[in-house]
Image (cartoon, rainbow, N blue to C red; front, top):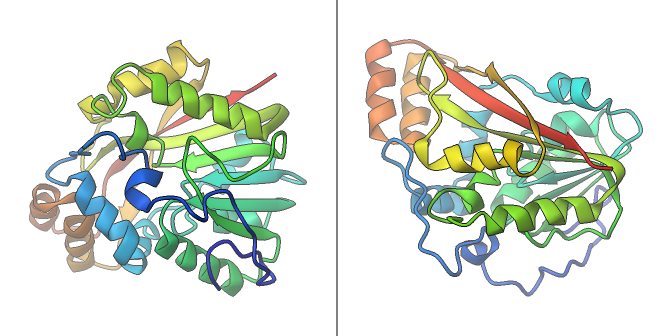
Length: 270
């Protein structure tokens, strides 16, 4: 299965087929935005997303499903859904079994290949994948009832990448374009990994505040721990993605559980 195919293996053309590579697609063409979180920068994450999707999927598979949390915000039955920044299908795969259709959009083709494999393995056929970016979603106007995005929009809206808030405004406008009247957007972002209390990265605080203050999103914070097979796997996978500082702290803890807090923001548009 290749990206830009549907559940039956049919090719799906998108406006992004001739786009520049992932660095432009995630909004980095004009800025040398560095996503620094406890020793890991954007270049590390970009390489992971492009070349180590399976290992990344192993990491995020250690967290619980978010389907019921999303369903509590917007009941899923019968909905057409877009997963923006879908990655390896963290949200796409569990949602596919509950909705009418789902489009998984991501900048990294390797991530979408893993997502497609997981969707096929789950027996789902109501899905498509498409390479795309936050500000140019490969979907027609008024085509979705629900848009979800997990740990993705932050890459385009950190304090350095989006000092004026213009990129966030453009992304929210693009969400509104693809959502039908009364459509809902649900965004998940980090509120701190490896801490026993919420500890969001400082460079994302303006973005989080703008979602509520300027764009009318409601907000909640909840625990979303990683539970690995054993302490060795916990150290290895946290070091792989989050860097040596968290890897060292995880090794010192000696536990298969790595604490995490997540934030959820949601809005239903008129």
